[in-house]
Image: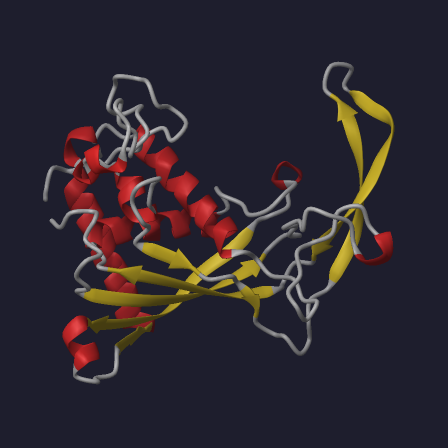
Length: 268
């Protein structure tokens, strides 16, 4: 098993491609109002005015899903655990934030002791082994249907509508498809198994993307469709990356899940 901070030598690179389909309305907000103040909460758009999903949004959902699963497992001794990134003083290893050291300083941090989530997605002192590109709309000619919905602020104490606080927000209509690209440096099978499980949870509806998820928004379908793999030697020799699709890709995903399962049961 390689160490987490293994970026000094490139062994292998993967490029995973997937398609993300909105099954319900989708609202990834821009943080401001729409053009000419037509709506209070606009969806995020690219330079062409088309909606997209930031890679950080997808990565955040994937990471939080993995962390929740790891914290519920009884496999700390096998490296399957998740730290609490907000905690810096607890003595329990399973609660400490990876990268925190009581005397401070990055040079004193043992990256080999990082939790599984930080090994895959990175920490304050360790770069991420996976990179998520922004998810761009697939059918750019047709665009995407964007509708406006009404909302009203609720007083949590009185459980009634808060006076004068009506608003509206934009929603990308169901059916919109987005292109997903995930890049992995020096992959480890069991960590890719965690990534695969997180994608399964997203596809099954147990995780959602964007805002207003408690109202039913943010449900998406997620399907891997292609994998490119290349080693450092192949890059130096000018060879093309090997490509896996359909059945071969499904078999590779199954191999990653098996590696995760074996580790959970005590294997290395």
